[in-house]
Image (cartoon, rainbow over all chains, first blue to last red; front, side):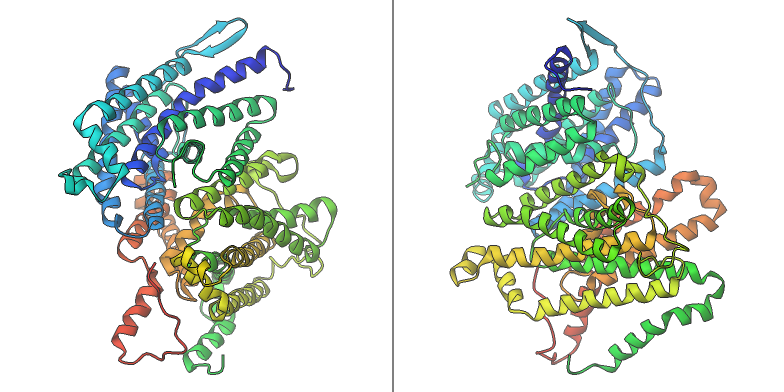
Length: 289
Length: 351
């Protein structure tokens, strides 16, 4: 398709905005975990994949969609807690890069386990909510729902982090890891809660993604690198930055994808990411000294 | 190397004689075993190249980009320009080194380290893979491509040697030995002390007059060149390249993990990692293929079993054995011995 300033171009831009909601939600969980525990879960997108399978089987097993979605969120929240207890805790004191790589092992494990358990074929719920036509442009309902739910989730998380005791403790610990235990905050409990919330956000993203995407064991590879990129670009730990970065990246993908081919949209986004990080290593909105 | 210990000598002779040992004992499946050995040697070379950077805390997830650039440059120049790999391989290496320096310079200049360095190089991996897929008119996209066979597939001009496995084995062996030599030279150089210092405290290293950026760029260039050469050799031997098999994040992660499994801080660590990972996946594959019971339980999904065990082992390695198989073994040996020979031993620094 040629790149012209016509209605299709506008459609691509708006679809990019809708995609940004989902990517921002995905980046949010990872961002929270990084900000608080100082660990990057390379396998974050694989947790989303597990959630998608969980929702798929719950729904096919007869549960209504909302119940299946809740099941998925709980499942991934639990997976996050288990991941923290079994894998992250033993390496909390070792070199940062080992913490990153150990979750890479989890990535391989989860992907292969999913292939063995669920097979390599594409699965979908058969739920396609249709699309809305507006001035010759079409937007699928699932994308609009995703965008709305992602915004609400971000708002709720923000309220939780700024209004509740444990939320404030979480933010405090991300600002000064050493002093908080002295102030009587149980670091281990905070870490577990954070891992649970991070997992729950991945589960929520999974619930939204099953409406739009087919499920297959490698789906994590499609989203994983994008999510890391958005987190770093927005400034690890900055939620607003994460949202704006998600918007920029998804515009590159949507517009680049509609002007050229999909891969080129992604490739340009990765190139842009590298250039920005060279200029501002702390990310667009990060406050790293 | 003034003193060559008897054990080393026996090892070298054994490696040279290996094709004939294989022929004597496994005559029927000689090709298969040689193929396995060649794979191990080529990947060992690539892993060794990565470990040159990795041991100094420069954990790159971008080396899949360099193997991919090396492999695709050679094959595309051969297929579309008819350029012999004798020129194609150096061009591939130069391109990889230029890309490495273009990414490395701003990274090192802006002091991008740790998570940020890993995630940035991860983006490089993906960028190169996406470019390969995007240029599908030339590269065959995600299906991959093959170098055109020259004559009967055995040619000095086209550097094609796939049909003659014994020849391929000696080529791979020579390459592997050269890789170890480079590792050894780096380990003995002044640059190594500079990089060791920089990996522990950049500011302090810079304050005693080490040009940290330049030292890091040097090692990055060597490391990228080795990976590009390894990728090109892989393409010439395998006679097939695909974006997932020789470029991208998957390859990068495999490189990193094999090095960690084997041991980053010892010369033969990456080689042990390659032996370990290849033998593990082959053994599992053979076990699974010969076991009707396993197949009937798991069906075609059984092929993922090796990756699952691999992932699990990696987690265990990083948690319980961060120095890798060989690193841990050597450490035990050191402890058991009362007085280690001080000069000839490389200190095993903490990660």
